[in-house]
Length: 162
Image (cartoon, rainbow, N blue to C red; front, side):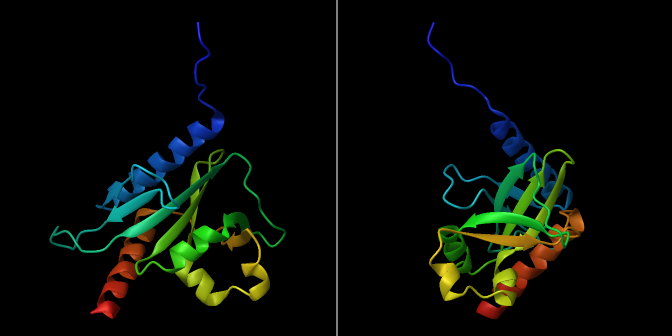
């Protein structure tokens, strides 16, 4: 019998992160779609207005899952990101959210990419690297009220475009 593919812990916690965030998005009244191919975006959130009408635009998610959350001395959560992804996300008109999922505690922490890099512009030295470490506030926990705030970011972007 031929060797079979193995489901690793990384596969399990990646699925856990997707379902954790998907549940919260559904609880908020929105829809999380998963693209067939992953090129730096793991999910797209479609939102609806107070009357239940679909809204244009989307919120992009990049999910990262770990059993070993890296917490710095200052309490921030450190996450290493590929600079090519950062450049791609910063070119997006709508919000891009990174969620780091702590599989041990079953908690998702988030960072709004555009807001983070507005406050922490990339330097020339950082641009020469392949990866960059971002710091996520440990109080930035994914919840339905947070997902609603992401919608407000998206609709604000949409209004600015008009």
